[in-house]
Length: 285
Image (cartoon, rainbow, N blue to C red):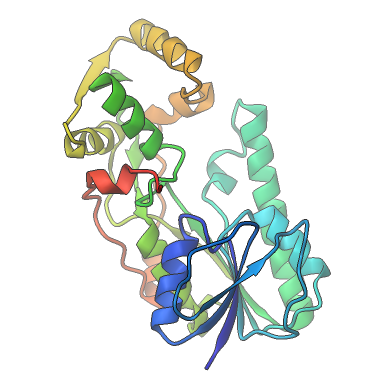
């Protein structure tokens, strides 16, 4: 039986990852700061990057589905041995590196530094590392974009967008990301490489939001408004602490599209089209 150490196992990608690994017969140690419900094949270990418990000396694989920079630092300092490392980053490493928002540029910098550190550490230890960069994640009710929009639309019964919000997007389901991590574990072509892992459909921002709104119970209306009126709506949302940042609003007209072909070629990545349901945007209890 192969063994895996999982970081971020209680998160939106980590949960389906645990289920899929356990379903394939892996024995899993998953870290969490809090008590977690039992999952067959999973041993929950209490701890985190700032309070690491004693771990076994070796695992067949280590997978990080949590913050990349924190994982990279731990991995560079840890004496836990493994021959295989898979870590999730984000396409924000590219899309936010020239953002007008200082915080977003910092996110991109930390992602880039984390990727570099993981590859360097793996190379020094003779471990094969793969980095997976998701696009716009959804499906577990824990993302900061579509779930937030669904919550506001459910409250207001409508959601405003500025006219011309037609930048292309590729939303990706958490189950497909978990499957990608599992698939590339035994794919030698993926060793030492980073991959964009977008969703299986490319669609305009406006259409993506429209599909979210129509699946809500009850459905909400999409209202396209002139930019000045949209700015007022954003100000109102900020009073509730739920408004997106200025840079994110500006990107609604930008195409953020990534090539799925390398991941398809090297480990058979085949994500689903964007067919949302209300349950996908319902936060877990």
